[in-house]
Length: 384
Image (cartoon, rainbow, N blue to C red; front, side, top):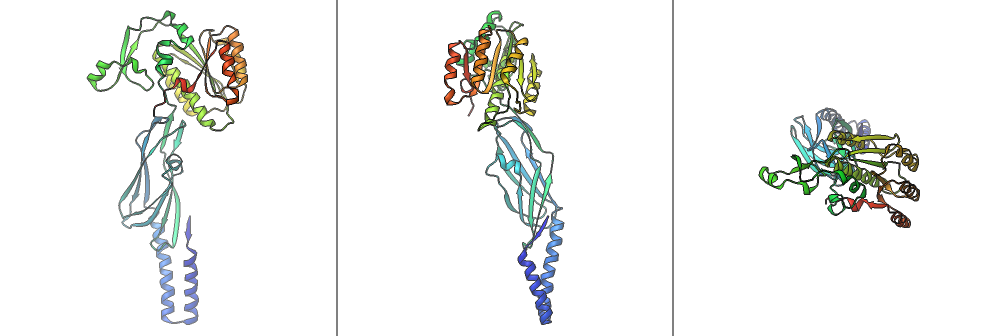
């Protein structure tokens, strides 16, 4: 789209009327000078907009939430003519980098300019940074053109995998369902193999001597007996509260962190997800964890069904001593269901992200029924 400055149109009409009425060479010289400026500016703008290109570079194509990512915008001018006014605006970048709203610059002929910054994502998903709006003006600021340059620059942001706080999880002392599964676990002093450190691994399993030797962290994998299982029920029903995206993200993070923690200890895990379309995942090896991660990348919490009914329906596939329920917001209906399941003989844990202040008494009800309710903050060591 091209816009022309109204003042210059008025000036052109005034010089035309003046030349017509006066008829002198000076009057016509003014008119033709104004008209020539208009034509040259228009031709320049049509020409220069075809010589401008934008390239957006990210130092990572995949990352986790809360992990910084550096970006570079390269503005290229393939013409020998300079650009006196060039403004760029990328809506996706400005949404995450508050200081980057738009940038105005002068671009010399046959030169490039670079704009650098840093992004940090709080919500998982696939983000497209390939749509950039360009605004250019000619030397006399008569014409302004804006157009869109597109590319396929996307970045995949996965839910962050945290380490569990040692005093809660270390040695399975505080989580009863895992403690019950420890009865048949082999000697932890038996090391199965050694591998490089991954996000979410316990720092207590670091092989310090080997890490010091090679200058990077290595983890000891211990031998555990087979047959250990844990079932996780994740509530991904749609939330209708303030900060729903943040709460939903934290519920997914705690689920992924727990799955990663159990998988690192060779515990087989079944994850049942209540969403717009219910899903289940059997986690036995590292590739299964990646499959679950891809699911969370592509799916948000959009379920609208009854989570309590989903819990009851899932009991047909769950052992009585291996159940963890994860929900973003703890409600009275959920508590009633959980207490009912506990009375049926299920040994379970509840993990919640948020609870309304007026519903704090629900935690006391769970405690009275010998049900451990752990909050997101109790389990996750948030890295600053």
